[in-house]
Image (cartoon, rainbow, N blue to C red; front, top):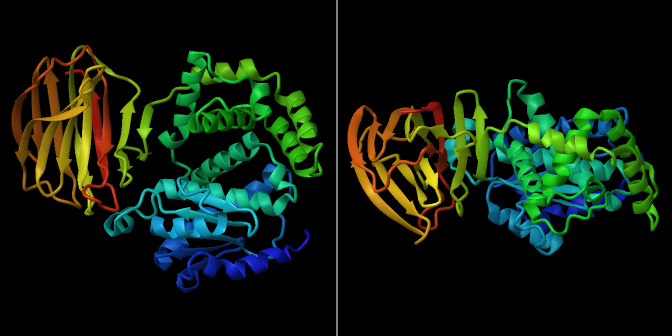
Length: 451
C-alpha cells in the first residue's frame, strides 16, 4: 500500500483544528486505530477503541482483501460534549455535518463522533458508552477504513458506502455481543422501507443503484439504500463482493460512475421483486419514532436527546379495549429524570404516564387537535428514587385506570374511553429548562397484555 504522507500532516494539525483540546485528551491505541476522547476519560477512550478495532478486518474482507497492514493508525475522535464536535466540524468542514453529530473528514482521513445521546456521569458509569455512540463510532471508522483502502473513495456510489457502513456497524455490535438480538436502530429502516413500499414510493432497484433517490427525505433515503445493501449482502454475498471489487478497482474519473453502475445493474438490477418480498415478510417488533431504545433481553435501555424525547411504540397493539402493563423501572441520576409509559394512541391523541425519580408520577393526556398536554392526575411517591428498580403497573378498562408504583395504588377516571386497539410504547423525556442531557432509564421485565 502506498504510504499516505498527507495524513501525517493532517493528524499533526488535528489538535489545532479541533480547538487545541485533543492533544490534552486521553488516547487509546490499538492495532489499527487510535481513539482520542475529548472531554472524556481514559475508560471512554478504551471503550471506543474496543468498538472500532474490529472494523478494519471487516472492511478489508468486504472488498475481498486479506487483512491489509497499515502504515499508520487510523484516527477517531470521540467528543464527550456536542460543542466540541461542532467546533471541530466547523474548523474541518465549515460546519457541513453539524446536525449529523458524526462525520468522516476526507482530507485527514479521520473520523469524528459526538457522544449521542449526551449522557450523565451516572449513566456512563452504569452502562458505558451509549449504544448509538458505539454504532456511529463503527460507522465512521468504516468510512475512514474505506478511504484508506480505496484511492477512488470520493467517487463511490452513495448506496454502497452508506450500506457498507451500516452493515459493518451492525456486524461489529454482534461480534462484540453475540447474544444481541434485533435492535430498533437497525430495524427501523425496514419499517420505513415497508411504508415506502405500501405507499408506492419505493424507488426501483435501478434507481437506487444510480443514486436517484433525491425525492425521498433524508431518513427514507438512508433507509432505502441501507436496507437494499443489507438484503443483498445477506442473500447474495458473492454478488455484493463482485460489486465491491468493481467499486474499489475501477479507476476514478469521468467514466467511473457509468462503469460501476453497469456492473451493479448486471449483478443486482433484477433483484427488485425479491427485495420487496423480503421487506414485506420482515417481522419488525418496534416503531422507534425518536431514538434511542436498545433491547438486552428483558432489559430495555432508553436514552433521550436533550432536544427530543425518545419515543418507541410496540408494533403489536393490545386488542379488546383494555390492557394490563407491569414491570420495573430504573432511572439514572441526571439533569432529567423522567421516563414515560405511553398508551392508547389514536387520532385523538394518547396518554403518557410520566414517572419521575425524586417525585412520583403524573398522567398526561395529549390532545392532537389542539396540540396540548393536560394533566389528568398525579401522585407523589418518595420510593421513586434514582439508581434502583421500582415496580410499576397500569391496568385500564373503558375509562377506568389503576396505577401502581412502588407498592402504592391510585384509581383514575380517564377523559376518553380506551380504544379497541390499545397501542402502547415507552419513552424517555428530553432535557428540561436548558438541560444538556435527556433522561436515561432501564425498563425491566415489561409485559403488556389484554386487561
